[in-house]
Length: 84
Image (cartoon, rainbow, N blue to C red; front, side):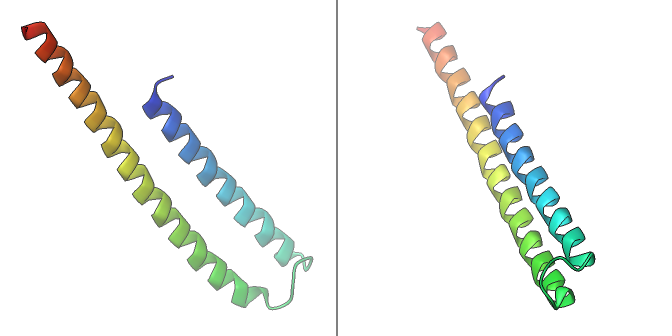
């Protein structure tokens, strides 16, 4: 597995775990196990999760750019060595 796939796998696992965590805590509040005022916390948690997903997408974009830049620069360096 290359670096690029490894990074994608880590980001996917983190996002999947965040979704499961949100779903599990939502079910607990729905059944009355969590704290009172679940409706207020649902909006706050939804906003927090949206922000977290946005942040993870931005990180993924940066990681994709870094990996493609390195691949391209490595290809260029190899071609330069072949030319000499």
